[in-house]
Length: 222
Ligand SMILES: Nc1ncnc2c1ncn2[C@@H]1O[C@H](COP(=O)(O)OP(=O)(O)O)[C@@H](O)[C@H]1O
Ligand SMILES: [Mg+2]
Image (cartoon, protein in one colour):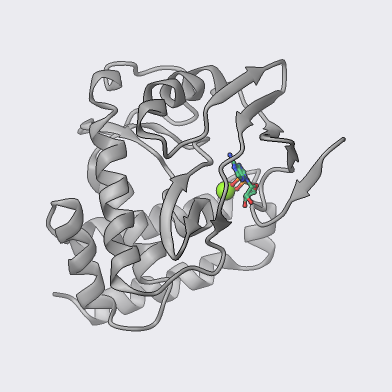
């Protein structure tokens, strides 16, 4: 394959080809491209450039990918606002129920990103400016993405987790809910243990990390 292999994802081999990325495309790619075209005015998501049998071409988002990400409040607040803008921009797509990788999750409020996390975020000057990897997008309740974002952006760092979780929710405009976070953690563990594509995460025992977070949340109930 021509182009530079981008590292850090773990599920897919993604190549940069000039101002584009080429990545494997699942059966859900047409639906995801429809979503990405819809999100284009926001200027935060890749623009779909092409699709063949098994690969897609998307615009390359400049910036640093958050495999190591800023720990300050300003960056956290901006991530929450970005998620809110993303969700609010999907309101007229919520009735599109088929074609996604995952079935719609009730109660449907928005189209979810499905894996809104620092490792799928691009940063510039310490602030989030872009979000990619929409493979897991599907209709569902806002809390599904909000809880995952808290697990990744807040619990992904050891400091001031409670205060920063509340700050994230305040910036998004919702309430913090332990039960939702626990449900989301359970689902992540099930996915790591059962999903055929999660070979690396399974081998590296990422489930133990999320199990530890369940214990943390249970021990620090609001
Ligand atoms: N549109 C994009 N713009 C810039 N970099 C990207 C883009 N899409 C993917 N990448 C890079 O490729 C890596 C893996 O891509 P990703 O879409 O997250 O696949 P995976 O399913 O493996 O997580 C990312 O960590 C990032 O470095
Ligand atoms: Mg990814």
